[in-house]
Length: 626
Picture 1 (cartoon, rainbow, N blue to C red):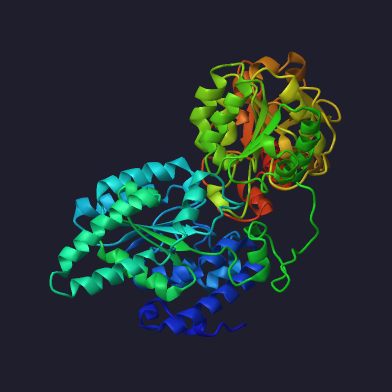
Picture 2: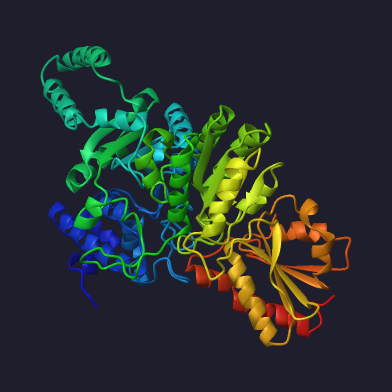
């Protein structure tokens, strides 16, 4: 087993006794450990390498078993987990049964809350601070938020409330000038101005100390402070955070652990809302991650020496979506692309390069992205808003009020990472979009099963639909089923021999599991047909008597979403007046663990083999044949 020097010898309780030289040695060992383990399991690399000194300083200056340290998003919590007793668990990071890549209170009392989405940490921290005050308890509350997360409006709502509250609360701004891709917008420029004079606070402290030591010095300090404030208000832009009611400390070099510790010590003594501005570099200490921090944000297994990914790179729905959109935009100047801080992850990097005036990265602001797309569509453009399923949840209000109620807004929503995502777990699985989109009147929901259908459905969405259209597709590539069936609402893609005993209905990428289940059932003597649905809205109108007449006595609806609000419920409702039983094969009403997509399919019983087994057992016992 590989040794990691001082990291092998240090416990959490030792950190306060270590010299700053030893702490620097510990940080080097932590970086080596993270690179080695993430290269084996995959995970978030750049963000965790960039926060090492800050995370060590936080564990040293606070007591994470009692104090509440909340990492915004939480994907940069690896150092925290290593130092709080979960080092051995990194062999199974993000694997089924292993530790999560995010904060997870079920793992340790040092994880104060679930954290998987950006911009919420200050809100949660302020709630904890209020609880501390009301209950008369004593502990520190710290929110660690990145400058990328500050592009989300929720963060400003919380900062405004926190600054006004007067609660002792520390907000650590981890400023690496990035979220996943490069940061955008006015806030990024504001932070750049704040970085100009990093020694300002230290100089101010020294001046006060010198003059306070001489007779009459306190009056001089007050006079200097008044003059300084007046001059600063004229010559320098004030800190947004000071205007909100925070004491602003920094900026400080986030890789100078002594400086970070000293600033945190000062923040603890201030007994008021404090913002500590820490500048870090994503990917710090790893040449390839520093050079390409966006590429090494979230990674699969790779060579720790060269950074090269293991296995060949294949086309994904995201990359193909980007290629198709570029082709269409070259022919139609009205087509625009909108994303929320994830141009590369949603396949839009090439579009951004080719059509910079028609590409809009709004930062981590999904609500704004949807409402802006509505405005663009209303004035004659053809916007496509590319957002992960799990993040589009934030825009439910805008989807209803700014898009759907009008009825004539032809905005397209490219819903990436729909269904089971896998290793990122419960916070990132896109298993709720069917439920919340189906509840919106007039929203068309299209489900391509392959790349050819994705292209056809984008064409339909832009040019053949009058209102809003959502196109949902999974993470990764297409399966064996590659026929374009988009000309029909639904199509029978596998006919049975004779009258079917079982009909399986599915859509999207899950059609591959449905076909596998049908083949396995046929091998066991169960006549099975498979219907593929391309549009899962307006089910009552689309189910024809001819289609219903082919179903037989029982129908199984196979899908990778939660039970409540699933498409299967729409099918059951449409068939309630017929002598047909409808059974549901979905993820159930629960939050799922992290693991590979294949493992989670099996865990839920929705892979082809598990589905066939469940159906066969019901049929053989007579419970699945009416």
